[in-house]
Length: 93
View (cartoon, rainbow, N blue to C red):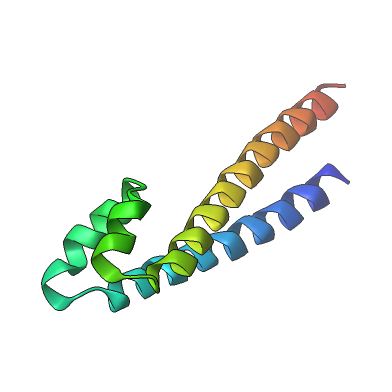
């Protein structure tokens, strides 16, 4: 049963990771050609207000989607770690 939960969590983690990557690509595409790499680094540093100032209001939904997907991904990874610990405890018994 716990293995099934781990698989479902892994699929959910993969889905949220894909959403985060697609949002990051959207931010880079919305950037000016000379600022694409620096904006990508700003996205990784969570400097969303700087990105919105550089790109404009179109960056707002993309940065929110990126932040929410990344937080969901990290939360799912934490749940997977806890579930793996439960699986290890169950196998010892």
